[in-house]
Length: 181
Image (cartoon, rainbow, N blue to C red; front, side, top):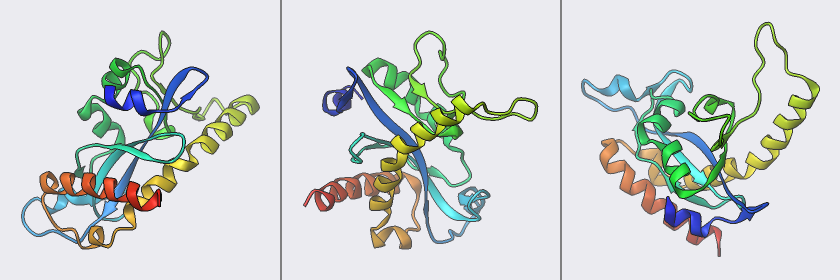
């Protein structure tokens, strides 16, 4: 992560990255562990990845691949992303799925999220405006994942996650090459 901090563009003096998770759809696996790759949210088999994207839309880092049933929040906790971002001096903008991930939100927030409405507490107009601004910043994050998922080999993926991680990281490098042509 320290290497990333040197290459991240700065906004207002603080290096900022965008964090998001994405499910890479795969073919159905056979064997006793096939249920762990079923994503109930997306209703398909897949592998979950967490990625860090800079504000220009370049995918900087991809986490180790996890089975599709895992949540983005749990995957971030497993990879200790908050601690790594804090050590590197980076801030992150995330979607509402990451609310509560930062363990020190009041002192020095590492991960900035929008506001969620509760049953008895609706979102105020000012909070809605903040959510709109954060969503506009995060749009480039979705584009970066879309570029990564364009590789046809990912649609035929049917391998163990420990082998899929190096493949996704290699495809990330190739995606940089293709997008920056």
